[in-house]
Image (cartoon, rainbow, N blue to C red; front, side):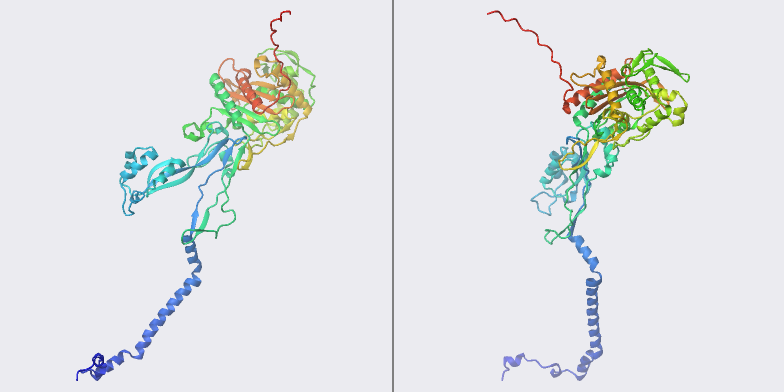
Amino acid sequence: MAPTSLQRSRRPLPEQRPGTSRQHRVVSIERLSPGRLLAVYGLLCLGLVGLAGRLAWLQVIDTANLEAKARAIQTQSQTPLGKRRTIVDRNGRLVALDEERFTLWAHPRYFNFPGDDPQKLRSREDVSARLAPVLAQPAALLHERMVGRASGVKLGTDIDPETADRIRQLGISGLDLEGYPQRIYPQGSLFANVVGFLNLERVPQAGLEQSRDRDLRRQENTLSMRRGADGTPLPEGLTAGSLYGDDLRLQLTLDARLQQVSQQALANQVAKWKAKRGAALVMDVRNGEMLALASYPTYDPNQFWKFNPGLFREWSVQDLYEPGSTFKPINLAIALQEKAIDPKGTVNDPGQLSIGGWPIFNHNRQGNGVIDFATVLEVSSNVGMVNAMAQVKRERFWEWLEKIGIDTRPDTDLPGAVAGELKPRSLFTGHAIEPAVAAFGQGFSLTPLKLAQLHAMLANGGRLVSPHITRGLRSGEALASTTGHSGIQLLDPEVTRTVLGWMEQTVANSDSLGIQVPGYRIGGKTGTAQKADRGVYIPGALITSFVGLLPIEEPRFVVLVVLDEPQGGNAYGSTVAAPVARQIIDALLVLEQIPPSRPVAQPAKAAGPATPPA
């Protein structure tokens, strides 16, 4: 009978198959012996133990390391650009600021246009053609720069934000814009002498940029933000203040409008008289704020590399000179304070005298006879000053010069300010010629800044204020207001009022001086001093100056103009420095809205034709 399908599917066991021997069955059993089974089992156990140990190591011991690696992958760090704070003048006009600029890098190995197949690369010629109109450069020049280079090609620098946006809109893969801050000085040379500049490595080199470097560094922290798997920013990890934006600005006391007038007037006069240099200072006598501190010649801080480094320092703050006749009002105040002279007294001026064998003359070598002290200033009598100051004991004279800080650095925020030079006490008191020449402003030296500070002391009732050009840091658009009265009281207010009256007479009685302004009471004094170098006077070299105080009834401002080495036989303080001061005073009266001291007389109207009788 034929086998069924069930029977056909069944196969005999190995021991039932024909030809299977007993020996073969024994060998199969030996291969599955307990020893080998134990060995295999042991290997499997060791593998499990090793895996468990590795897991324990990763989860228990190496947790911190793995977590740090994960945080590094998940966290995006943004390094700040290192911007500096903005500088503005007293009215908020921009003086210095940081603007973002970009450097364009090209990586030809990745060039691809929007909508292209990601695997398709564009040629250097294609990219150069698209970039040329945006960068305003020839396509051939751009292509030449990229020839033979696969990555890291600098195609442009100092690219403004608008141009950078146009490059981004091209959407070309393989172009990289690297941002960086660039210091800009919108006023050009106007404030260069006091603000200074940053070099190409953004290292401050002069002025406030250097002296206030720490204050001008904007508070910027590296921002670290965690992101989820899809790139979504997560609040975790952000500390308080991480997103704070520093909007502080350094506000100056200087007025850009008055600074412009001062600098232009100086430039014209320096050119006219072929002077070496000039400086103009305007100070608020109440608190020491500087409204103008101009110098000429000057430089453009935006292109500092084109100018002589000698222009990078403000000489009116750092260079010493003998003030000459502009110091005579200070000396008369000292004599009045010591009660060595009477305000209504007189002094004899024979025109010349000899002190310790040294001859002393007036500038015109003529005498003026017996004159009062107002006339001493008006005619600028050297001999009259020597006789007046001879009434002050030498020791007291020297002590006063030291007390008002001739040999002390002024307390100021002006960078580079230096102390003046005063002869030692023993030399000053032991030789009669020293106090004699000091009586008319020679034999010692100071800076124009110090002289302005001392005349401010006369104007404000005897207080020695600290000259300064900054009002501090302010947030956003906020501006600081003018501070109140300050300073150390050194002179009696009555003494200073007397000297101011004498200075007013000097201006009022000198029509040729050109300082008189109808309706305003102004005091002043000219100076024409010999210029010394290392204690030796330079033949023919002069420093001319003029100092003005206004308004006399309630003084607010001191104006000082100094021009170094003007050329010409008629070079005096009245002809060289006073015209600059007049232009500054005219602008100051308008900008500060100073009301007239007295009504201005109106010219009489011409009589009209007679009315015929009815």
